[in-house]
Every structure is written in structure tokens, then in C-alpha cells.
Image (cartoon, rainbow, N blue to C red; front, top):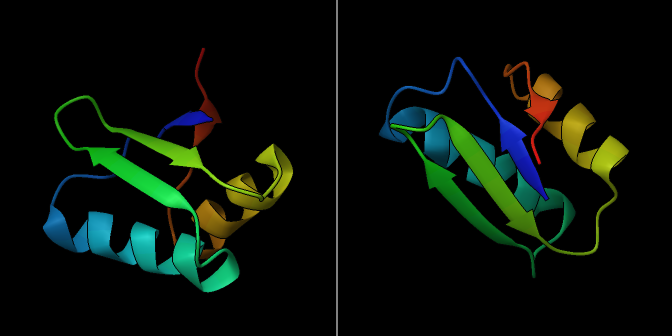
Length: 65
């Protein structure tokens, strides 16, 4: 799944996002692309769970194609 995260702008942001997702799914593969402001996740969590985790971490997001 791929998410557009417009407020992600630095390494601290990506670290926070990765930590939040890995806390819920330790086996998830998380790839953050700062210039594109996208986060790709391959794991067991649903789209709804990931959207909620990103918001709880402080990042509004939308699902991209």
C-alpha cells in the first residue's frame, strides 16, 4: 500500500512513521520517499489501520494508486 504524506519532510519524520508502523506490525516493510512525500508499506495491517497509525503519529495521509 502506498500513502501520500504531505507533511513528511525529514529523517525525523520517516523515523517516527517507521517506528509507529513497526510497533503494530514488526514484520512490515516500510519505505519512505521524502522528495515524493510517500510511504509504501508491505505488511499484515489493513489500509484503515495504517491510515490511523499515520494519523496517530501526527501525519495526515491519503492512499495513492
